[in-house]
Amino acid sequence: MEKKSYFVNGVGVISPQYTFDNTVFLPQPQEYENTILKCVVPDFKAYIQPVQLRRLSRLLRIGLSAAITCLRDAKDEAPTGIITSTGYGFLDDTAKFLTELLQQDEKQLTPTHFMQSTYNALGGLVASHIQCTGYNTTYVSKGFAFETALCDALMRLNEDASQHFLVGSYDEADATQFAVNSKAGYYRAEPTNNLKLFERPAAGSLQGEGAAFFFISAHKTEQTWCSIKDTRMMYAPGEEELTSALIDFLLVNLLSAEDVDIFINGASGDVDHDGIINRIGERFFTKSEQLRFKHLCGEYCTASSFALWMGASVLKKQQIPGIARMNCVPEKASLKNVLIVNQYGGRDYTFILLERG
Image (tube, rainbow, N blue to C red; front, side, top):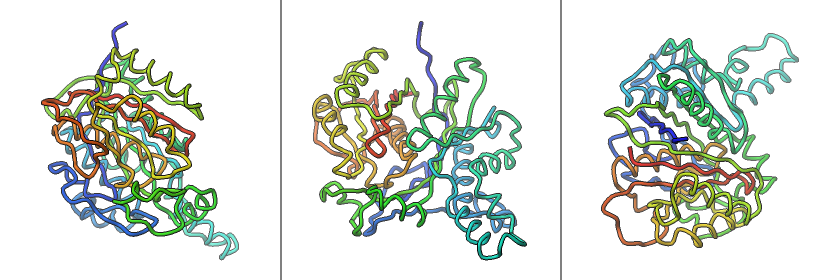
């Protein structure tokens, strides 16, 4: 059966880099000397009414602004449905609610922190803002959250090509999460220059955050960034199992490793978790442009959405940002195929294949 194509017709991303302006592509990489990378935010008043703005938490402001940016970019403010994803949700509001619960002995609690701490708060906020009464769900599945949301949208488009979905992700760099995950060895104990992350190998990565939205449709438009050809998830595979799955993934899509123009490597700078993914790059993609991205956005559950934005930008603009380059290969006249291989915690592995729209 012929595989269908799914198009990214709009993009909106807010991250620790200047990504909210779609007219430029990583013009000035932001440099941090820290263990946490925080979002560079736009003027929220350009997206949200001041009366509503003062009632929203920081991450809700970021997420809603990213969604509005995406809809404006797609020139379509009426999606069939909204599908969001997150690894941990709104932990800052959750912590504030639980702290107040204890301090006030469960009496006279402010409802705001509770309402804004639920996983579906952003999906509901976006739907209310654009008056979308269609399908609305949120996936909370750690390193597979964004890919699961993406798969949901693609399967629904497979059933009905007339639909179009706003697919998003969000995670915040929260102090509580940082403390817990640092004990598990996910993050570095000492401040590290993010742009030199891969030059200083050590255990742990840098905590990042961000919100990203993509307008996904079965039809190409003038605003199309790229097409999504396929995606796959694997939980805790061995190296040979992952390698075999990757070869099969390419074969199913009628490609070989030599056909991949851009290989986006989801290494996080953590020596305990990057080995397999780095060896795959060295083994199969030495003739491809190899890019990294987690020194720009940090590590978080839905960081693969930043990689999707990077791959879509490379294909649409036919440019490769120097700050993301891993290797030096002869430049190609045209960039057609992008393969994203991401890992989270050395456990959750995902493939996303993109093609020039």
